[in-house]
Amino acid sequence: MLPFKLVYSDDYYLPIGSHVFPAEKYKCIYDRLLASGVAAPSDFVSPHPATDEDVLLVHTPQYVHKLKTGTLTAMEELELEVPYSPELVRAFWLAAGGSALAADHALNDGVGISIGGGFHHAFPGHGEGFCVINDVAVAIRCMQRDDKIRTAMTFDCDVHQGNGTATIFSGTRASSDQQSSGWGSVLNPNHPARRRSAHDEDVFTISLHQLNNYPAFKPPSSLDLNLPDGIGDADYLACVGDALSLGLNKLKPDLICYLAGADPYCEDQLGGLSLTIEGLKERDAIVYRTAKAAGIPVMVTLAGGYAMKLEDTITIHCNTVVAAKEVFGGKD
Ligand SMILES: [Zn+2]
Image 1 (cartoon, rainbow, N blue to C red):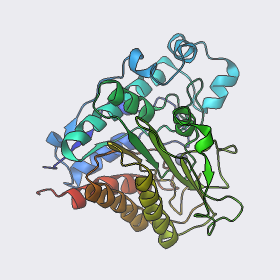
Image 2 (cartoon, rainbow, N blue to C red):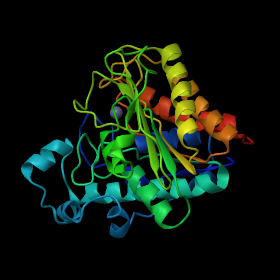
Image 3 (cartoon, rainbow, N blue to C red):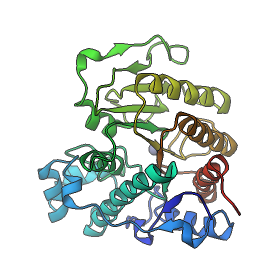
């Protein structure tokens, strides 16, 4: 039995048909975790969908209304890059509820993992890049509303920049705090890492992503690491450690929300970095070890993963659970 909970539902499945986003991955991960003995049925908890009230903590009433009534414009639906349906909306409400539940369990157990979520391209008033609503942002705002946390840090390791998350939480910071940092310039002299100061009840957003990739416009996170094409395990892992210590120097949050994207993988169809499966697992372990050493609970969502072979995406996501088991302990 694991010393932490895995949040999962068969209804995490996204009804998007044949698509580069492998919507069946959630069920495959669940099945593999059980079949391999990494997890037992009792390690899983089922989420409830977020309420509309929860979603409205992040998203505009107009956008929520359009989603609930199927009245997105053609352009808005195109921007989602997944076909709209009421079932799709229900799956995203469930993903948000799942992330909130994982956060709740993280406060108890040190870590809580949702076998879903990480839809970081959703903005307050629109969705894009396969992301309808921003489940992580909704979870954070719910936890703050319910007085379970005051501050949070998002640590986004999807290969694509967390543009929605950056935008959602940018309003809680004074823009005059923005400063350029010499740090990061080693990797990209033209695009130095950017960071801002944190405030009470703030959310500090960190994104490690490939610079030359979607989204073309990257609204500033609290700290952005613009990684060059083709970066491999050693350089990437050094960045992970540096970004975490830089971030934790700025703010010691009540909760870290880790987006464990599988798409920095060298064989990803939508990514241009060169991490190995082992490197990605070590990345997860670094995040867990750092959070554990700092005494900060970490909530985990999966985010993207588009490996040429679906099996590889499943392995990378399963390893996110295996690494947690190794760091946080667990009896077989
Ligand atoms: Zn991605």
